Length: 243
Image (cartoon, rainbow, N blue to C red):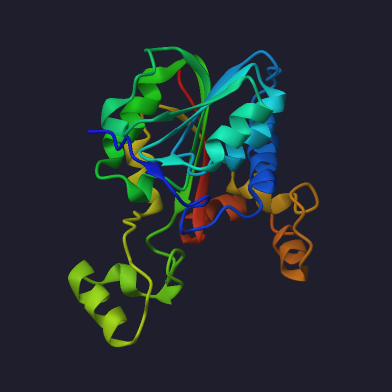
């Protein structure tokens, strides 16, 4: 059942820093693959957390709905600022969105946290209009550093053993994310038309405010090379289109 209890914390434990910058990345990435003006589109942000990304996108679209299994303190503040923004406390298993009702879905760093990621993907497909788009991003199992706890290799080990090992080493972090590989995720997403957006992002560091020297070096690699190496990247960014 959806969790209807309000969270007294303003932010999730993973933080809410730079949500406006992340919203800018999402808008720029989707705009590259979809030339349709977004001003008259409806959006849903699944797993929106405290709502910063949805709030930053709200001025650019007709309406946006943030959905999370628990409510957050900042939702009221963001809704007061943006009349076209609303939040729903719902789980993936009980989404109230109608079939074929949404132009764009954001699913940013969510698949690894839900009990049934295949259900999450099927629900995204269900609520998107034909021709609608989804920004889908998440971590890569094959990358050696687990991005939620910043430990090497622990996500490759049996989960109970990893947690025990981390606790023995004094870690206060909880390993509760379940990432998959590039090939597994692409197989799960095969109902969509899939565009791998990682090469586009890496080739345009100036657009995405990546100023470190190594970003500039990576941007020199040709698109085919970057595309072929995506399976090794720390995370994935796919732009999905419902046929």
